[in-house]
Length: 208
Image 1: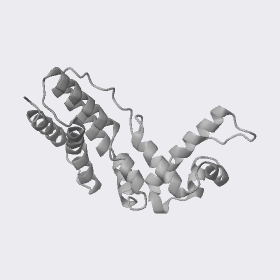
Image 2: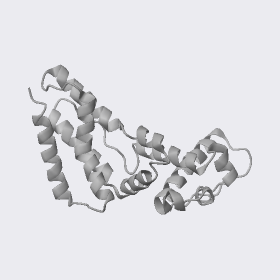
Image 3: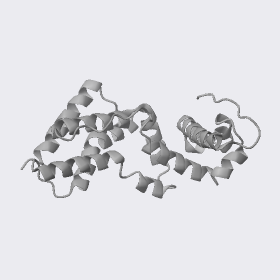
Image 4: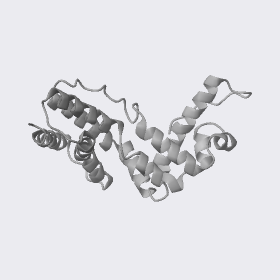
């Protein structure tokens, strides 16, 4: 777990308040990943963020509220668990789909993401709204936009790009993530080959 410096006393500046908000989320994410939802305590999170329980409760009314906020924040970040690549060029559909598949697969199989997904799934009954919010990802929207572009260009036929995008992400990231959550991880070579086959299969279903 990362070490954060002690905070100065007195009324915080806007910059210090923003930094504390960020540090609280980072600390909570680390503690939840390390201890799980049940094992994490507000006291441990506050200590990791180098602040007080009172300061934490001023921002989040409960551990439940903090957990929901942190999971949503982590899932939506483009710099965690690593820096996301920029969107691919749309002109080459096969290359763009492969680039998206590789990025989605890498994120889904990152150990920190696998652990967070396990914890979130275990708590899905307690946080149904969290599960609904995470059902559609920014990468699915990217695939949908890519497909819309090529429908307009006349290179593919696709009646419902949102559903197709959902299926594509499930194929290249959802199923691998499911396997990883059960402890099944394939070699990088095998995973790459499966992505190539998935992209080829998906493209064949779209050709006029």
